[in-house]
Amino acid sequence: MASLQWHRFCDCSSRALVRHVTLVACVLLCAAPGAAHEQAPFDTRRASPGLRLELIEVETAAATTSTEIKYRLRASGLARDVVFGVWAKDFGHAYHEVASGFRLDESGAIVSNEVDGDRRPRRLDELVLTPGPYPRGAAWEVALASLDGHLRTFAKVIPRPLTGRDGTCSISLELASRRGDRFVVSGAGFVPGEDISTELRYSGQTSRKTARVSAEGHLMPDVLFLGGTSPDHGARFLVKGRSCEVAVDYQWGEPALEPR
Image (cartoon, rainbow, N blue to C red; front, side, top):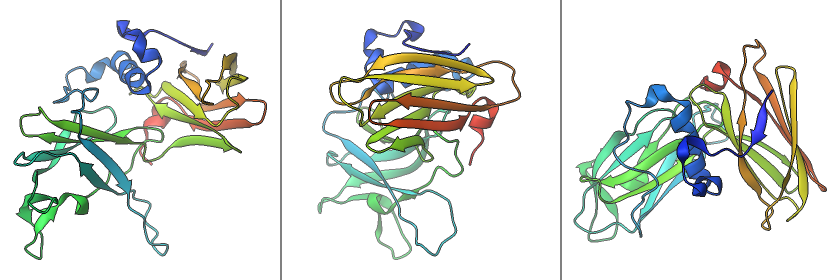
């Protein structure tokens, strides 16, 4: 039977129960022993104070039929005379460098020591990155780090979200296992302090529980575990509140890992 409850994974500290990023990282660590040999060059939980990095989705022309999702970078707080590289992290893999040689110039622009076709210095905010085909609900991460790794900042997006909405209420599922059997649930827009009911259905099984919404109207982050040998890999997660009923239909197991 599926379970939907709080867990203390891998002896992680209790802060993992209230910090979404730490919770996901801990689930990944325990759920994917095959990834243990892949070591990221820096700890994403320890960004340098004052540095900031954002991923801005590039809008595509209405006439195009391309489904590729692209992003530009926006960074601030960089120190002068420090060279930075751009790193990307696909779901379940380590960071790899995708561009290098960026620094803050005299005008305040972040430019590379490379030049573009017009012989201009390559600007960071003109760099376009894409994760390519990607699993639904999986996070894609980008880092800007100095050559020695001491200065670093990070940004994270979910290119193909698993979300549901009803009125002001919304829920999101984030893939948190390389086996496709664990998802982190979050939600917002619910009546503050209300009791809500949740229901997880998959492989002919149903698991129900109740939970209390935070004073800000958020669901407390939780983890869905799905498993078994059923050939049916469809699942549905439903949340019912006083003012809304919102659900997400999704795939688990190997189908959840297929790029789309």
